[in-house]
Image 1: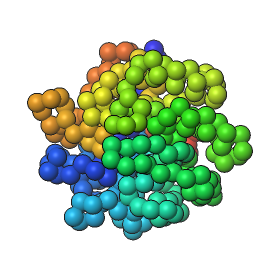
Image 2: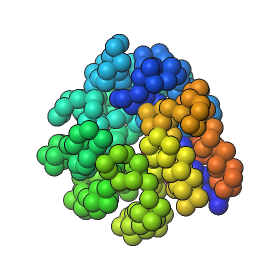
Image 3: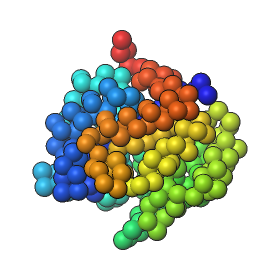
Length: 280
């Protein structure tokens, strides 16, 4: 294959702590440093959450603003994607950072089970988040935890709630949600191509030990890949990942295996229809 592979690094998330892995970046300064290393290793998208000093998740727009400023300085051209996920806040607080105009933001378009609770994404909140993204020129990444979420994205696109071709990410391996099943994965790919066109970009993310599995499936099938300490803190059963960059390097190695060039930030922006912001 010759089509470039976009690597997204999910640096922090809402759950992993330094007790799980000391490399998990918590402070804004740590997140910027960790992202810069991952950017230099080959990641062209950073998926970002912010945390409080006690490591609990936050939705504070001021923290997101500081993170965005640092990332733009130290990772010029990298696509900045903020999380609007439900662990960081409740209701519209989840989208309080969207007026900062990041390049992208995650958008979960339906509810599903998580390991110990229901991940609630009620229709009125989904509609509001999508409207905020449209208003501020933020491209959504559709987080598909279930087949119905891909179909919902098509419905929202038809209604004009999503600008351009949606970028769908399959999330597999979350306990009590969709397991990492190859037959289901193949059907997700087929469904996305049928609904959005054969050239529509898509991505896949695996949780825990399934991270590297989904990385390989996605790269082999011509899609894009997500990695990072948010989803998985280990290199293998016996070793913690020393950094986000180390997890990015695993994906780079898989790209070499399948003869997929790693997308530069400029190529990633072109593939996703994002402006280059005048970066040289």
